[in-house]
Image (cartoon, rainbow, N blue to C red; front, side):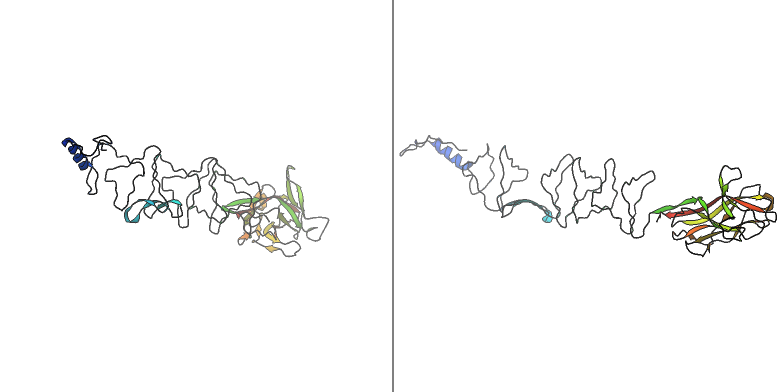
Length: 385
């Protein structure tokens, strides 16, 4: 900045001016900033104090390559109604402003972007709100992390849409008291091979729905009993001289169902299965037998039947199938016959199911041992009521 050529008080009337002093004054005036403008190369920084500097007009600028640096404790203040604009193309601006009411904000216009580069961070200590129409997207290759001890809250009335995969590793997914997980119509819950599920509470299937099995599971039931039979060779109604009962097997090491020695036809019984799976399908029945005494005159036959408690009606569900034995192996070999329903046979819990047996007979008398009677089928859902 300019310095005095004479000390204060030395310019007095009738002072003699040295030509060198005029040279100094002329040089300083030529170097001074003036209203005509121009380009000035200051030898040192221009420091303005006191009342400071006030600029008006709209053409003030820092030229290309220029820089304004704020030193320690310095600041730029934006007062109410003022703004700093990052002037993007086609209105893609970022505006740091203070409203007339004194609220500071950072406005990012459509097309403008705030980038936080790798290694950078954006720390949010207050509340952040995505307004109506707003969106928060994690792009391909990116990730969103909720750190240990943090909480992500989805308030009542909100919706979270998951169109991709959700992986749960060592953490625990909990539905708290009062919460609900709903699978809407057309949705599927899939467990991969090797996975397991542990359920300690109540699991309710509403609206007559049942858990489905895919593929359908095979099942067998061989727990049988003599549900009812004739007496006295079919001539009586009991209680003495039953035509069928549970007895020891020929070796005495197991149980079987045995028929009474018969010399004439007329005796019959129904062998019923216990605990058949409701809603499952019976695809076939096998019966393993061996004869006793001499050979038969009339071979035993088998028919799948069903009945309801208290009803006299016995519904036939298969054709009549003869026993697998012939005369030569009647009392020497265990053989198995297979009976197939005449149509799809779905187990109805309101009915009981069994195998009707017409007993063998011979002039010299013969009987039958039923060693095993198995209902076989498939189930495509679980139903136990």
